Image 1 (tube, helix red, strand yellow):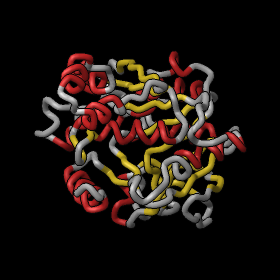
Image 2 (cartoon, rainbow, N blue to C red):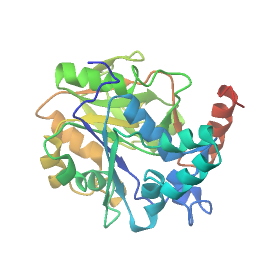
Image 3 (cartoon, rainbow, N blue to C red):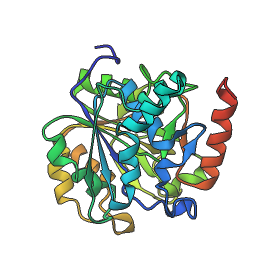
Amino acid sequence: MSRNQFNSMVAIIPVAGFGTRMLPASKSIPKEMLTLLDKPLIQYVVEEAYSAGIRKVVLVTHASKSSIENHFDTNFELEWQLEAKDKNEVLNSVRSVCPNDLNICAVRQSRGLGLGHAILCAQDIVGSNDFVVLLPDVLINHYLSNLAEENLAAMIKRFENTSVGQVMVEPVQDDDIEKYGIADLDGKSLLPGNSCVVSSFLEKPSKEQAPSNYAVVGRYVLPPSIWALLEKTKPGAGGEIQLTDAIDKLIETEKVEAFHITGKSHDCGNKTGYVSTFLEFAQLDPRF
């Protein structure tokens, strides 16, 4: 199936966090609405899902994040003003924020109990569908990869062909290992754009304990069988319900694969990562 075709998968994007690493910028503006060039961060993530064939997105949000929902809603007055003034280029850019065939809905996470809990909040909407999870802090550089064929799109294609869950990974420096969930590939190496079976994930191990330097990037393709495991997952690292813990349980009964990113990811959830991403995207964008 072409990546531009509709598929039945649902994308879950958790946006309920307070963005403390981006304070004071995120005090009154959701970190996901901070702009990268001329678009908020969250729009890049939604566009990635859309490019991969996703046509339904669930935002797991918080009462303070209504501006995210507003961004993807239609602003009739603004569009009327732009049309009346013949600002067609700007009008088209505003309308392209949410294509007509993209359905975006929101559900609230009442308590900040971790990523696993945030995913569970979307269960009633996703139901028995296979689904993908995209963390909004992480951007895939679309200037360096083809979003319609590579990365998330390739993970979905692999899942459709094998029914095996996919978790995106990326090599990191040894000093950064303790910041991430780390994949145990039983000593196997992995080339970009390829998948291999993973035996377990360790959440934020020390570099001495880590089985590899392949870190979870923030893109997942998962079967509905993960729901029952998430419901039983107890708080782990940081006192939160970790998605990687539930995936570890899934590995006990069915295969899960690590997928090596093509190109590179950008962590925009901290100031250094945000600034470096802004500069790199600006240098790669022909408009700038």
